[in-house]
Length: 355
Ligand code: F6P
Image (cartoon, rainbow, N blue to C red; front, side):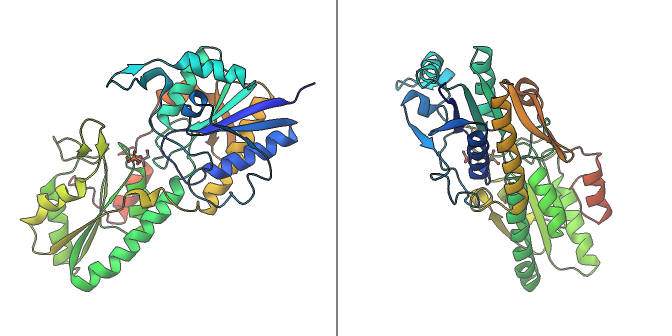
């Protein structure tokens, strides 16, 4: 009997730990008696026949590497594929044909929100797909954590530590902008871990007056510097998100807005650092390698069990399979009344809301 064949692809933005998922899935599939085809550039690879065999040899050494061996893109949605004339066309039938022609018995799609939505639509059309969630933003309610998040937090925390020493030496306010899209998880975790004075997140709109007031209060108490960690999706009370590009809705630049907002109200110098893609690049920390390995193994097992339409997820200490449909339906925001925010407030961190 012919060996079962698994396809695997990575879609959306990259994230530390993607290679660890690929490695674990390939090794587990081998143990389950299957062979694996790697599809390059997400679903796009199925339109251009960009597929490579993945064996234990081809994946050797990838566990600690950032990025993705299979490359990725956040364009190339087959349901809304650019037609070259400024419009879009539906090429999902070509994707389905390619999956059949390649004799793929089960496809593991590793990706964020966009990839999961494509996976769900293809599942609805009868394609056997299992999903693995990835995002540094940690914004999926179906899983406690996504791999890549803790690495991004570690990078952002190191940035806070480094800004501390220079802020202290110069009596400056340092504003660090971190990623996270419309969720404040990276800012909240890195802000607490790095001992920030002020954390601004999308879930708690800030008042510039309150931010300035808490800086002046610290000055009165003898501190002449401040560290502000601001999530890229943060906004003023009654204000809007700050976009680098409104059409593509790429967030960015809020740190400059905060600096402008408070400059007239304080007598300290202000400097801004936008951390950007450094949070996404490089080697995953041990936690993310382990979570990614567990996700890869679980995904390959789901394919072997022909339990399709599911996404692997972490709940507590265990890995579960949840319907992809549920996973895409519910984003996970920071709870302004939750324990993490309460802990931050208890140790004196302000959220710029006057509470
Ligand atoms: O979703 C991950 C993420 O890094 C966000 O935190 C950020 O807003 C976005 O992707 C950046 O996307 P791009 O790599 O397309 O600039």
